[in-house]
Image 1 (cartoon, rainbow, N blue to C red):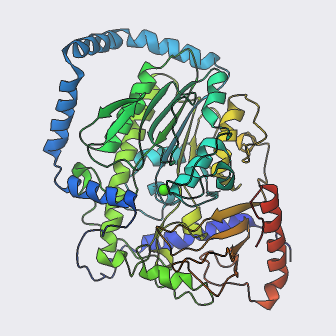
Image 2 (image 1 turned 120 degrees about the vertical axis):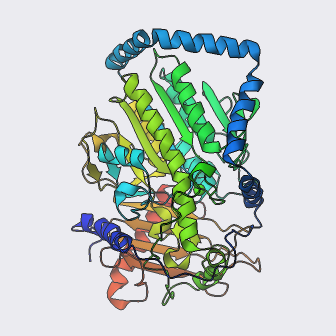
Image 3 (image 1 turned 90 degrees about the vertical axis):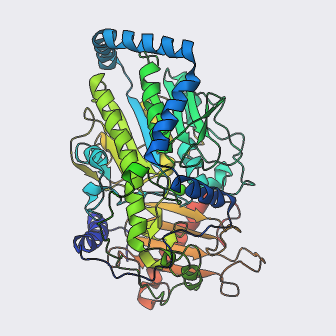
Length: 558
Ligand SMILES: [Ca+2]
């Protein structure tokens, strides 16, 4: 049997339709045992931070938010305040002239502006216009999609925050960047090509705003003209930013501040140059704390349970049953609060992100730059929201590895375009360099999708490597690597010789999973033991070995 999918478009449509069918069933979901409407803390220092953040936020009211904004203004100082007021007044008076100058500059500019905005842990289908979660209110994400393009086969090569983020900055696989997990012992290697210095050298004005979350890694002195960030996870309320290295406490909701810094950069930048701006949101990471003003927005919504909620894992690796009982599974975590309540929190967090996109689009429209600014919207990894009885990400199943990927640029892309080519998180950095006219360094492992949107590349990549490394803080998912083609997915759980008592699937390793995504888009039938699929299994195993060799995976196939 050939590995090439004769009609690969159909596979992806199946995934979307399966979820859409669920989405249309709007009757109340069966209620689970609800003992408390809270999330229990995790052992991870990051999540304990989030927990503290949650407790603090419950006491936060709209009054506090307003008070916080006033306090911030107080701190600016009187002279600063007068200067800012005067320059704001001057800007208003001079605005039409400045904007027309920007329009002229944009029209004559050779290379486009680029904004890459990404959330944390947003599911690939968590955009209203995708249709599977009709309760979502994301009019501006919808606008990016319906007036731009939807790369509906977009994936991460590791479904975990820090490794994926290291790839988004460098175009390299985690086993090359060195950021193989979220732990503070996981360090970015020194010689890895971070994208910003290349863009700065090419004449771009460069900015990074918001969450980075790559352990022991700083973006200072990495070719950025403007950097407003914070260490680690940050907190949803009263977050302390570091603005160009200067400690800057804020009051109120983090997403609002990220949105504010984003607009500030655009207003103050050198308009003679094109710009590139990364915007990393803390939302919608666990804690799932919305702005109080949106807290009750979805209180009357009841969300249907996912189709694979009661997966029994027949013919599947044994770690899944254990994971289901853990903090990253429904029986260990989600049953502690109402399923719909979790979805309401996620939906409300997304509203604040969407507000920022709305303001961004309005500003670019006003300056005349909307048509030739490429806006890319994505997430650092996917998310199980009850699918397969799981919570969180990490595993190589579709819910975990797929991310949203919307691209808006009227000059380049027709409204409502849908791309089926598989794109990866490692493709971002080379794509940005390609648009900037910079030669892509050989050590960047992703490939530019510029030829895709220019209509020069129809097929896209045939296959790609996935990797996940066991993390002691969350011991339920074993180390795994795999390969995904348009039609098939092969997952390998190797024997890595880990003797830790908490390492899963002891005595069973190595273990294989094989899925035919064309006929089983929900990944419920493992074909690895199916004699009729032996040929495909062999081909996929060879493909994985080849991918590991080509990408320099240490130790290779096991
Ligand atoms: Ca994440």
